[in-house]
Image 1: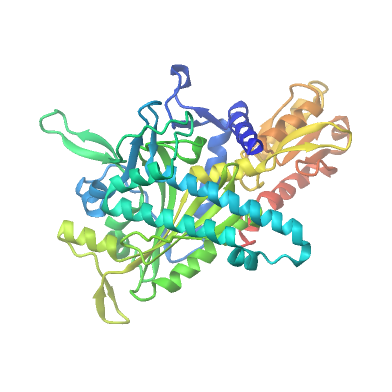
Image 2: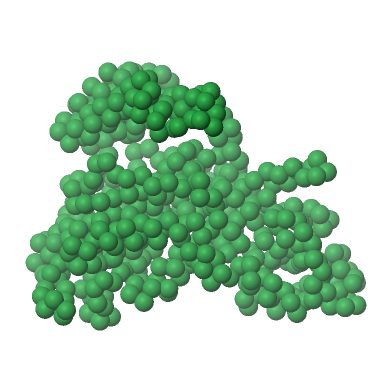
Length: 512
């Protein structure tokens, strides 16, 4: 556990030191759970967004894009259920004055039981060796069976309490003797519902101002524009509408760096299908979205599906793609079959029909929707944390290297004159002038070339191109590969093709 914490601390530290992420308003001691993307972070974030957009919109003829406004008519959020039901269960500790999500406290307790199960399994695996059958052990070992039964009972009671009576949730916390994680105090307040939407005002004076909300999700902008997009684009079912953009949630407990923030960015696509065909589409997008993640080469073992045991009232299927962050497996992307709930709600509250005329069936109907939604900030964290590595080299020295997928790297190549004289900087600048039309490149002449290599390794730059005195004679340079540290002598005229072959989105997306 301590090792995971150390890894996470290194991620946060590296992100700041090398210009990826800064605490927001740091000169004023910052703002809790709000962060600024710095000069390198904004490039990495942009590249992730573009990688998603190209695969989702550009490569699919029946998916188009949208950029809906952050501010929407307030009835939007009444129709969507956010005004009445977008709540988290809040509980305070009277001694520490700390605030927590009540359901998270219970789920963390269950996680400790799961850790006990894992220890039992690991011990049995060592004991039985190659003959070990994990599935059989889990279903027959009395202690493990008892642990699983306890988890099911706890989660069932939690779900019932969340629906019927929040005081049952408090009673469960007290019965399990769950303590404040920081102080150990068990002196809890009652559980209360806390609405997560940020409110604002529209109007010139307080008397006439209209109450608005900063959107807590981007999906509703797609739903209210469904008919506009369908008619103006002459779209035929099935078709999708994709969007990336900011959303805002007044989280009770925002933690784990950029994993859970109050201002964040989503990449969503709502896919509209005929009623009855939603499960076929759901399975397709479930498989397709995992392939997209795997195309980045972060390791298949770092992903897993987690089916929702308790579905939202509007859904008939839901699954999370979970990723193994430094603090364990957590949700990265959700795929949900939302049926026709959203469009029907907006029909009801607006008084306008949001239906599609299907010429093949010769009938009108409200389409069903399959949603894919991935957090851009969480995707950034998954890529960044997995790529940050400490390596021990053959000579016993170590290097910190950010092995970002080269297609996402903020800077694709750094051009380094060996010395700051003899015309070498001029040649390096000419190379930059040629390459910068196609790639994000950097110039670096400070320090010895070895130090510059290490600096670019830590920034995640896939290539370092060194201009030396031989370059003057034969127009060749040394190109160094970040991951292998291999160095090749190539012609300046070949650089563009070499870099393009490694960082091309086409080449990476073809892996899907």
